[in-house]
Length: 380
Image 1 (cartoon, rainbow, N blue to C red):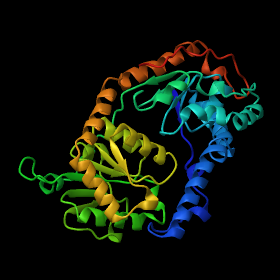
Image 2 (image 1 turned 90 degrees about the horizontal axis):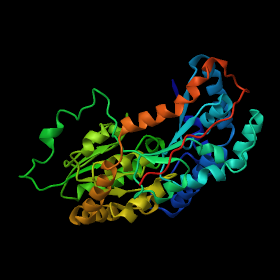
Image 3 (image 1 turned 90 degrees about the vertical axis):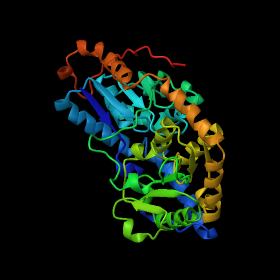
Image 4 (image 1 turned 120 degrees about the horizontal axis):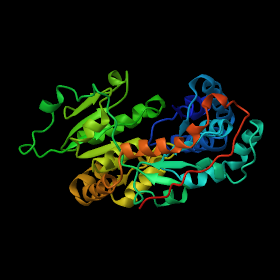
């Protein structure tokens, strides 16, 4: 069995005092937006990632292990409770890159606070963080996207598979509402902003700005605004608001994707070769946006500089210049050349083979055995 550990939502939430952003276009709100971004980033390092939440989650995983009896723990790269629990249990642990930041620096940066947790759990010291990536680190973007990913020990690359639920489908009205291929030259634009941003105070004003930009573009647009948010917006007749839509399916019929720079959105767009306009707001979205722009697959409109005119110009540039789609398609081909999820499953199973010789039921928190790293190397 495999235990999957994720960072608790509470550890991701900014403090209540910083949770309200005011609209773009005003000097005072810009300072507050930047302050929140810096506070959010700080919480996601020393306080959030390697703080009390990591130790609490480690203890939760250890308690569950008595009945769940896992043979392997798979964790998000920014979640360290699963790593600590795996070390106590003597289990292999694989990490999955879920952000576009500098993962190669994370283990060393957080080694001191993680070492304190190791001492609390009765583990030997690991002052350099070498144990953090002792087995397998999974990247779902190719080396051409992330040159620094090679610096994370035991990194392997796999093909992004855009996830769908069995009952996912586009709305029934959509085929008749979108421009008819071959007869209507208007492009289709899709805009979506993830799950965290709709809870922020600046969200409504930012969406209103985006709608104003789309109103003056010769396009047809679908804008996903989040659950329960439809009554709060008015939009032009060429724009259709939805609470949600299966993003991977929508991207298959999209000419341009406007989004907040989340790593899932970046990967899903590149997997389908869709060019982007990115409005980065928080955490790793700034680095994701920068990297997509460096690759030539996107242009960036900073949140603090967001205006209808600037966003309209960015969209017009990406739609008119084929180099953006060519760059996105080039990264798509890099992704398609990687091994698929079936290979990842086999690699995860391979991590458990040696450990399966030891009955899981004999392991308890506080009892450790020597771990032997599985040989995994960066693929080219």
